[in-house]
Image (cartoon, rainbow, N blue to C red; front, side, top):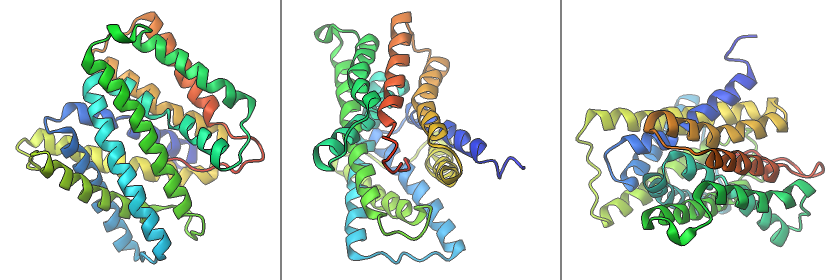
Length: 298
């Protein structure tokens, strides 16, 4: 079996590429909105070229188009809040907080979709809060204002990301294709338009004056947004849900590693323990009851 055909290798390679997303945001000198704009613009154009070469048509119903536009709104908001959270609290913690979306989805399932949580999921939420408290400290008022804002923005990111995943799931209920490449291409380009308008309204320039920024943003759009996504989604039908869950945890775990290695983030033993507890809670929260259909994640 070649490396290219190994679904586990594709799965974990994709997770590793996506874990680099906040690193690119931290490295560039452009505004958070501008970096989000170029991520989805470059990724969306790359996916559109792939669809053009493969001669895939965008034959969506009006309902699906509406859901995709709504998903793009959620995704644009996700990037808007997340990129600012990265600036304030770093790639590791901001990514961990964004992955709290599993708890938002769990609560939506319980309150609106009639799903009964499994015992591990019930334990997951208080466990995640304990882990978060160990990372940021339990003296909330004693934290710097920017740090508190970054934590809040990270939690808002989780809400927006959950909204994006839900609308994408609804948009694909009657989809024939296994891979939502067409949907992601549409969402990416609509999100780019929304973030571009936002950047101009904020008085932020979309011009790239540094070749370093061009390189980092190209890596962000092509490697993390486009290639990372394709590797993960193409592998999901061929791997177990446990393996997919472990790969899900690679993103916040590796983002913490990159934060320490590349940006010299100081980590106390309590913060490390808190990160481990929070990541374990995310895993428990993402586990579905055995009779519930497992959905793919971006």
